[in-house]
Amino acid sequence: MTHDLSFWSLIANASLIVQLVLLGLVLISLSSWWVIGKKGVVLTSARRAANRFEDDFWSGIDLASLYARINRQKETVWGMEAIFLAGFQEFLRLRSQSTMDPESVVSGAQRAMRAAGSRELDDLEIYLSLLATTGSTSPYIGLFGTVWGIMNAFRALGVAQQATLAQVAPGIAEALIATAMGLFAAIPAVIFYNRYAHEVDRLANRYETFMEEFSNILQRQSYHLRKSYAEAARAPVAQG
Image (cartoon, rainbow, N blue to C red):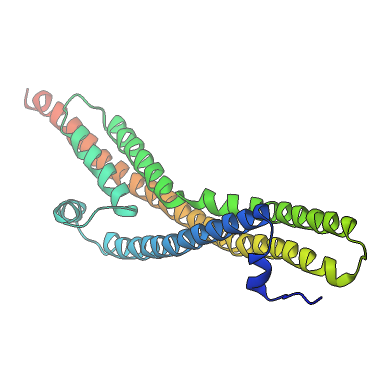
């Protein structure tokens, strides 16, 4: 008796449990590849946007002009631009209040930037957990299908009058397909998860560095503001 050992024939003749495992792994693999493609585009865009903004920010442009230009943009503000916008907007709002201490103004701007930075990082990290889950669980899901298929193969072998390799080979082959599918789903997910997690960490470091540098600039501006307040406070005394 001969058996058709082609790939599609093995899947078609597999037990229902093995077929469900294979279907689940195919869906998981397709989902992970969707995340891989989407996150690749998002992280590339974030890196380019950060490069463009840093070029503008350090070109010597007036911060108020840069702020006004970003506010006029029709596109969605995100990444480093969103951090700058949140910080400078809070800085201007607090500075307009005469009762605010200059140090408190800078501290408020820093808190606004940290909150904006956290939101940006959350957006960059979204769906990455799916890649991590796929990489860690897919081999075990495939192994479950393999164990189930081999178990069925040996059960069929046990009731057969004559045990031959030709009888057990199709069952074992269809079972091993589940292991192969599990690895096929897991390996790309692990590779791209590590790559994208590293990219997110690099962007997080760039955001953090920018927030520190921008805070220093705001600190210098607040120093000049405090100096002008002190001169204004001494003016009546000098006139008297």
